[in-house]
Image 1 (cartoon, helix red, strand yellow):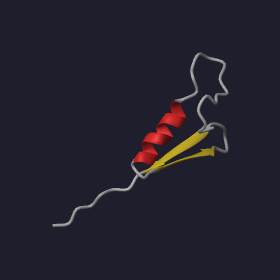
Image 2 (cartoon, helix red, strand yellow):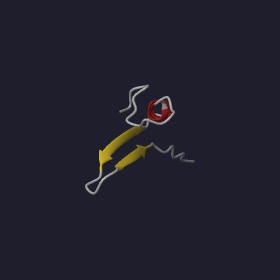
Image 3 (cartoon, helix red, strand yellow):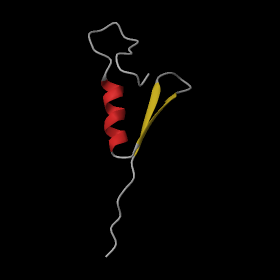
Length: 55
């Protein structure tokens, strides 16, 4: 699903959205995960670290 040009839709589109999103999130040392929801649909979770500066 995170591979470029993968799509389950028949609409116009390149299938690049999740691939690009994952690359951006990875560049910030984050993580993008996906889960099927029990009643249908999907849940996408973005996890990013925070930089906490101490003085």
